[in-house]
Length: 167
Image (cartoon, rainbow, N blue to C red; front, side, top):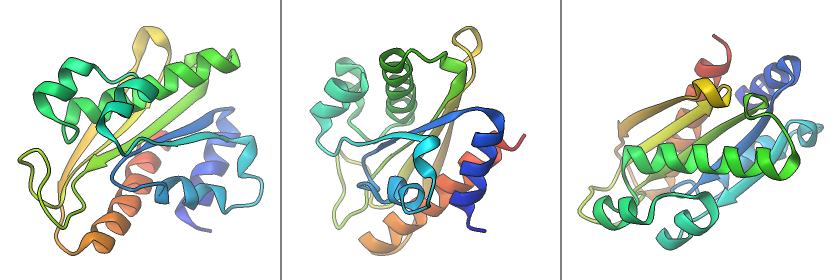
């Protein structure tokens, strides 16, 4: 059983849903889940906000934060996950505690972005009820070319998500 299958099975057993907010991984993380038969009963949405301004428009990331820090920042990762989670829960009439989010933002290369080096990456897993939201951001500095960095980011995203939901 793949990591994505274990995650979907665990969330299903917990009665929870999943949303994915991606930048650096460009949809690759969502694809890990969507290729699994039956994923649609757990996976609600995958949003790729590659353009920085769309992180604000689609995911609710603070415009000020994006202007001051750029898109590659731990707080941006947190706001991406939290923003999509809140938006989807609200649109579907779900309790926030029923929805788990994972987000990715970083620099895949070949050149730096906003002064951040190639391979800098932030992944956030956001979960919990409105009164006790838990958003954990994980920072990584990866080596390799664009494809290696993106694929490593997907594996790290799956790993962090598993750690957060299996506890």
